[in-house]
Amino acid sequence: MRTETDADPGSAPGVGGDPALAAHLARLAGEVLIARRRDAVGLGARELRDLGDTAAQAVLAAELARLAPGDAVLSEEAVDDLARLVARRVWIIDPLDGTREYSEGRDDFAVHVALWQDGELVAGAVAMPARDQVLTTVLDPARPAPARRTAGAPVRLAVSRSRAPQLVHDVAERLGAELVPMGSAGVKAMAVVTGEVDAYLHAGGQYEWDSAAPVAVARAHGLHTSRVDGSALRYNRPDPSLPDLLVCRPELADLLLRAVADLTPTPREEA
Image 1 (tube, helix red, strand yellow):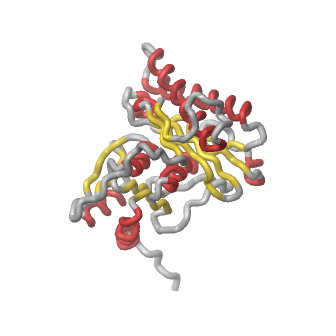
Image 2 (cartoon, one colour):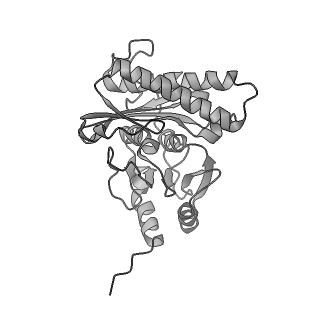
Image 3 (cartoon, rainbow, N blue to C red):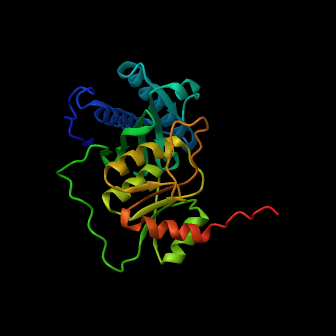
């Protein structure tokens, strides 16, 4: 699986530090997911989703216990150990983002691995194993920068192919934007990194593991990341709910945030 990192993909995970470890973890879980799906003859969609979630969680938990035994972990697929709230280093992981796409044999699912340290996301990787790709917080000088937007071209918004939030439809209508359907949150955010779309706007409910790794990678590539009201995204909170997200080209941030603000009702003041 091709990895965007300056560490040798064949070297030990410790070489290159935390970004290389994040890439190793995401890549390994992705390989397990591909193998399980390939070998899961006769399984229904629900069984395949459960199998993928369980297998990817198992390999990530084992590798983190082996390679980062002193670090805390917040995972979608594990019991939340609140000892993470006093830990300096917390791995925030989603072993399989896009279970529907995975179970349908599609390629737009992902693995998310991020490291939060002392209040900030400091490393991350998003694997898209069916596309043989891992994007990380280490920039690949060989990969060309996304093409500049054509003046006057409609804004391209990544959107869920099955349950797009109404806010996204409203923003698209207001701006004359083009909606580009695709699968998991990680795939949508990485589409902004690669230039396939201009923005990913979400307001339908998410958790920290849905956005931590995509946000870490997007920030490393110079993109704007925030809540839809423009406030900062904060991680390793007691309640891991983090329901909304904006990832976009920096030059579009003000436009999109203004559109959201104009479309969001202001709470009425109490008499």
